Image 1: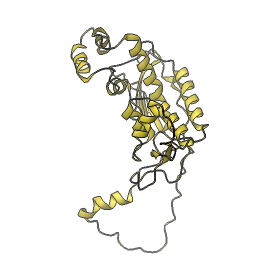
Image 2 (image 1 turned 135 degrees about the horizontal axis):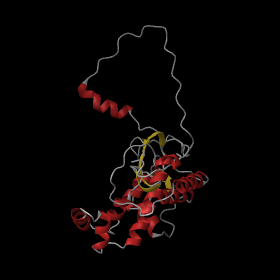
Image 3 (image 1 turned 90 degrees about the vertical axis):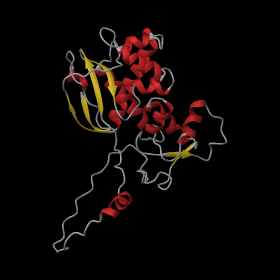
Image 4 (image 1 turned 45 degrees about the vertical axis):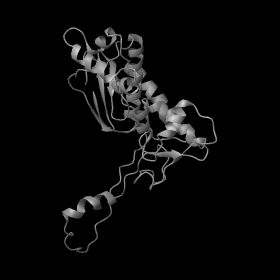
Length: 274
């Protein structure tokens, strides 16, 4: 099942259970494996070459002794929940159920759709209830006034090291190989404690903050009525200036509140969905 939106997501289902979720909004199982160093690029490439015929790529990784079966399954399940959260925390426009696609890393037993929806809703509610309901995709952060005065855990230190003013919680999660939900929650806490601050527009190069720090819905701008006067022809476009001018005018779209979580129960069926 493909969820159309921003960032959107691809839900792989087998016999009514969600076995994998891929979304640009969160690190998938492959990214968590490779970026964290649990599996080297060399081992991953070798497993891809050997994982043909009756043995899957996943089984090949385990057979090579690169990672244990239990650890791999736990990591894939984490990626499933995180991908569902990232998809629901953005804009959801539509969903399309289509023929199945192959997936390299999948949860053996899968996650029941109703349980996945329940957990995703819990995470969205927990984040919205925090003192600083941070969006995973909107606010960019910089070190705050308390950053040097407090003892920090390793995770908080890594977050601070990557809080350059140009990165959102989603960006930092990819860099340090952690799920986007726990990193978003931790950044929200650090903002409350003064360890982090929202980056200024200058620091984030046209950041989409604009003073909005909650997950409230985005309001559609009202279309201005056309004046009853002739404004003349449109100005001519100059190619040599077009690129520079558009960069000055354009800002990324703002992320809205989490929409209603999609009901995946209607996608049940053997090998249903993408």
